Image (cartoon, rainbow, N blue to C red):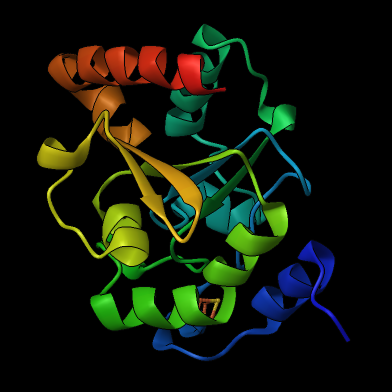
Length: 181
Ligand code: SF4
């Protein structure tokens, strides 16, 4: 049977393919629908996301909503997910092998199914997982076309929220993004 976003989400909630499943409360498949104008990929669930099973519900979620508002979009018009679907303990960065497993099993299929006009990579984990690049400082604000799909790189909202200089950079990046959507 062909995958749907719903069947992928069900699979993610049951997934035990990497050790991250052991400490999760709830996996976080993502939120949004097929054909969303933008798909945004963050890092991994934090404590609040892990409790409710939804992406970007904490303070960085509010910051992300603000950035989206600046380009005239609401959360329900985009698809939001993470490079990893289960919370790493103590909010550590997901390991490369965890990112690879989650990408191969779930993220690549979500990207294909959502089929957004632009896929936004928020921060280093998403950048490495999807494009195999490490340096957000070098890649932010740039469009990368890979397999006929447009990717746009910027910082993670948690960094924008914490550091005023990164917030300014993100505002400029989102201005560029606005022209693309
Ligand atoms: S992080 Fe991804 S691969 Fe690992 S258990 Fe969760 S859903 Fe499965």
